[in-house]
Image (tube, rainbow, N blue to C red):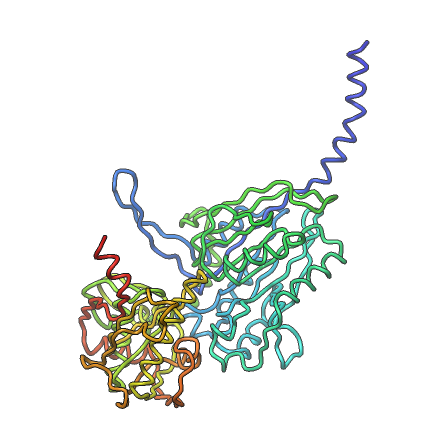
Length: 522
């Protein structure tokens, strides 16, 4: 009798149990970021446990779309965290329109504008976005001509019975990463105010889940999580090109990012209690998009190949031979940067030349050099600019640059290196912050100590001159810039054609005495 009673109780409880379970909903989020127009698969090599090397291809538009379609189900949210523009010639030739056309294939739920979406100018971007079939977001970037934000501030998606609010945030320091002329009609709004306003609006709309689609970088995403952990559930990020192989949890906020160049697709599976508006369980990972003939999307491949075929003939021309690998680096001196700065110096007949490490977007293995390689190394097509300063001002510029790099490093950030030709200088970081006036220990131009009263001519690109204070700080002398009409990659192509064989050896021209002494002691 007791068993029968227990069984009846069990039967009565089943509907209650089922009802409770219906309030737990499953959602899959697929995400990627920072493609930088790498629409074609890229080649990589890896070694197995025996030391044998295997070459394989990954990424590209058709491959990424194939993986998304394979993993997508009716409970899926598809998000892109920005910087689809800029990085390969097709993006430059079409001024970004190629990337919007390709993103239209993905059935995207939301895309946040990255800083590189503005590289062809605000008007070009506005035109490109007119053909987008997806929601593009940019809550903190205001566009004066339209008297509105450049994209929607937020959107709401209903997925599997879950009401999901998505706020889109573009890099707040747009002025520090984009040429001023490209954003002359753009204003950056206070990010904290915008996020708080979005949270308030989405809560009023009874959203179960709030996602921040962020193009700020993982460090800033963590700061946001520390401020808004009571309201923001998930941050899907981009900008820093960080492959988070597992989600980072900061104050309970789930932070994900999928590297760059479509090498990885991020997958985040969550269970949401819609009664409590809470993520109760999650599992996230990165999936390497290894080329697989059974996965890639053939229609996307045909569209990419059609686009590329228009420019292939011009770009695949061999112009020279590289005798040793070129290494690009944002933070450290590189033989590639020194070679390109040398081209600027020689072409303009200047005493010194600078190039910013972050402006060179690709290393290159020794062998043939094509026009395409130069375009991919130098995708921005910067103007060459010249100016002249006294030796006294040059010392002030380099002292400021040293201090700026030290201070940004202390903030766990990196001010990109300025590779130089014609200039060699030493400094002692051990004097910071006690004796900053004497931190520059020696400086010479073309083998001779700098004379305070002598005039020195300098060549660089318009990115550096447009952000002079960011790289060189404030100086006492008035500096006047002259645009030469030369484009960086054009004169680099000409220099390679002329030299035919390029031998690039890294020379240490920026020397920190403190670090050099420590290395010698070790």
